[in-house]
Image (cartoon, rainbow, N blue to C red):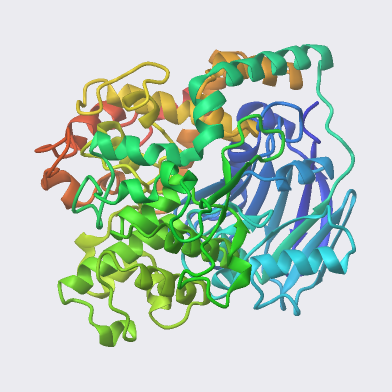
Amino acid sequence: MAWTRKILRVDLDKGTCADEPLNMEWAFKYLGQRGLATKYLVEETDPRVDPLSPKNKMIMATGPLTGTSASTAGRYSVITKGALTGAIACSNSGGFFGNEMKNAGYDMIIFEGKAKTPVYLLIENDKARLLDAGDLWGKSVWDTEETIKAKHQDPLIRVASIGVSGEKGVKFAGIINDMHRAAGRSGVGTVMGSKNLKAVAIRGTKGVAVEDFDKFLDAVAAGKKVLAENAVTGEGLPTFGTQILMSIVNETGALPTRNHQDVQFEGAGDISAEAMAKPRRSDGKPNLVTSAACFGCTIACGRISTIDRTHYTVVERPQYQVASGGLEYEAAWALGAATGVNDLDALTFANFICNEQGFDPISFGATVGAAMEMFEAGVITEKDTGGIKLNFGSAEAVTELAELTGKAEGFGAEIGLGSKLLCEKYGKPELAMQVKGQEFPAYDSRGIQGMGLTYATSNRGACHLRSYTVASEVLGIPEKTDPLVTDGKAGLVKAFQDATAVYDSAGLCLFTSFAWTLDDVSPQIDAACEGDWSVDNLLEVGERIWTLERKYNMDAGFTGKDDTLPARLLKDAAKAGPAKGKVSGLDVMLPEYYQIRGWTEDGVPSNETLERLAL
């Protein structure tokens, strides 16, 4: 139960859609979503395939809890070889699309090949067909979703689509569902665009069954009670959203500023959660309109925002005056502190563009920050940028580049390469703040040591959602550890990585882990699915998934030498705050991490480890 036990395989070359049974032997070893889809990708593709080749596959996958009454159980993931990184990519999204896919009767959809002309997939319960998307190609995500719903005369159809950025090969294009929820990182939308696949539209009404209904209801009720009574999931996130972190991380001295040149941003208060809720001087209205929740979520951390109608970014742009998808912490940091911009309306506008045209605001903002540093050093000039003055603090530059990048035009096409390729092109690779080609999120690893190891070892490139040690090092969850020390961080990172793989594979939002441990998750999975899903077994599943991803990357050409950080974080000490004078202690943590994982000194999973995990 819980699994639908059915896959939809879409051959874009032939234009066919066919059902097939889910491999249940694999399901019991990898659970679902991230883990199970990764197993399919590993078995069906060459790790050295070009991410944009028709031979690369793209998988949309749900977890066994997706579509059930468990809190936050509306997640789905997109698994492929990432266009930005060339590494394993698994990009997770909320909203309502995952629930619709599960209720249509599918655990996952596997896309292979490339359509001769643009198409979109329409699923109506058991009926799946590819339809012409010629009239949708060139449209934004927002226009695409509205057009599909109007065409099929069903406002309840759920749509996941790419914008122009995905069509034109922006390296960090994402897939947007429900207008503003994103499978946003690693270039999964770029892969989708390379297949001439514009959108997936689903209407599902079949329901989701569980193994032991009464036991499941009890476990779900207990889990929701824990979330409601927790200070973070019951109060902080519902009230302030993820933006509650802006002031906290800035005070911690770990807010990367102006391309990681600084660790604190003097303008953080202007773009914080508190600023979003404060009435503006110009019109007396706050940036924040209301909160929003994904399917089945009892936390509701999402934001709906508005922009001052007189602000330069929205003049003659009525569609941006009020739009779904207000600033979340990572986007606010990347568009703001990373570029030195403290104009809240400008950041909100740029974030709307990211949603509308479907590209990752983290990679975008971080890449703009790198370009700004090169501009101020004279490496890039106005001749290169088409007349745009790329100075740190320029809101106009950020908003103009957002529009250009969304269409892959002008210098926006250069930004669309991502920071690694952009900085290499201009002879300054050391200025790209990335790991394995993916830009850092909003935590400086000199001020939060565990995040340095997290970034260096992340299987999809620099990422906070693979091991959020900030929970422990800053928020004290599940226990407080000192962010400035390296002792114990190798074990902490491994524990977070393995547990996170379980949350992602179950179909749950990672934010539940602020309140839940696997002791709360295990009873829900155990009641929903046949089999033994004890905490110990789940931890083994998580470790198996992590190691399989690692093995895929090594087969793709990555080595232990890629488990590193830019020299700036290893050699240039933090200039201010609690971490003043400190650099990342990666050199101390990494060997211990390899040993704890049962890997060799070079970071290769040993034969004993592979055998223990049945790999």
